[in-house]
Length: 449
Image (tube, rainbow, N blue to C red; front, side, top):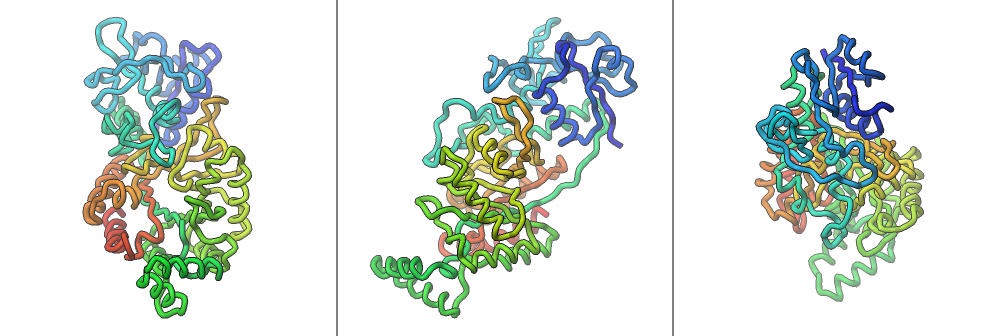
């Protein structure tokens, strides 16, 4: 049975601010599933029969009575994206959960020990404070995982925040509610079909390009598919759903319905075949929007709003799930736009160039607005691994990819978390560059279930 705790802030006469409440929500609600409440005054805190946690202030003299102290380095009292100068905590000190150093250390007044304000570190990780300010970005305007502190410190290999929080709870004998490990496959549909269900104009134009460029094999394949002699390579939905059903998994599909452009190359949203496919998947899976590259880069909400309305019309239901095309995301701006447009669950939180846990979390958790200093009405669902990361960025074999995903699964299983996988309908086509990856997907799901 989970334990109840009472929290106290000796240096905050006005009680907890939004940052304190956000961190406590992630620690005790999202990860530990514990009951907790904030003491209104010190007397209530001291007289409570529940386990006591003090954040900030001087170390209490009666820690032997079960009071747990966490020092404050000041980040939770800052505003906006300001980060105070910080030092590393001592790795061996019992105040540093997890056994390795963390940012936001606090020098002890009694000796040379540097204790850990891991609440500040948790906040820094989950609101993605590292991503504010100037950074060297890739060709698509994305922060690369290999250039982050989390990558250098080895925090991406497991849900580091969840691991540290549980380590802290166990070290202090706090009883918490363990969660069941889950696997959630998610499928991005950038091009729903390779040849079918396109307009005659697009079909003739593409066939003409095949002829002009001498792509005779592709031209012949296009004709065979359009005549019904050969299946469309990207029409992998029945096979995908069969794999998910056999293993008791429910997938989420994200459809690109953007206006055609340089990076948005999907079918027209008016395609009857595309619309029928989306409605069919609604019966066995969840469906969300895959906002286009141009919509994300636009200064206005209108393009993304239009794409969301298109999916709303197709499924005849509110659209509450999204994943940005190319995993595009800007600190605060991306989340704020999604929230304003009625999206309640975003599945973009992952890196394109490396697998792992961008915010140190596998569980979903609320986004935080650093400008307005508030918890947002938007749940973030972290992505641990993507097909293109292995094939294009790391350039590893399907067999090696299975092993790498299995290692991530073991780390998530250790904390009772959620392993979310990002794949594409074309990556299980066994066509072109994806030859051999269909069997990989099947083996991977069987391995990590």
